[in-house]
Length: 105
Image (cartoon, rainbow, N blue to C red; front, top):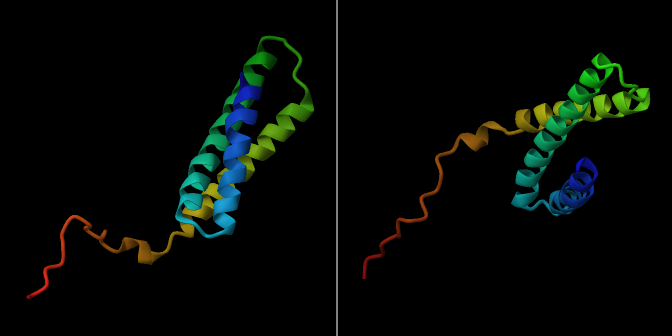
């Protein structure tokens, strides 16, 4: 299940997000935030699974723990940096697109 999620959703989403970020398109920033949260939670879930497997006496490869710990830490740090990069200009009131500008005839 995890492999199909990784290959079917996360990898194409990351590629699309990278392409949109490279071209400075707004959807790239939205996808990046979602994917960073997804990777952090997925890595945390795999690490929690490894902890319970170890507690139950099942062998867990050290490489698996290291890789997912690094992915979780890296995505969390990038997510914090991403949110801190949202500058004060983001505090502008939203543009109300439902009101039309009336011109005098």
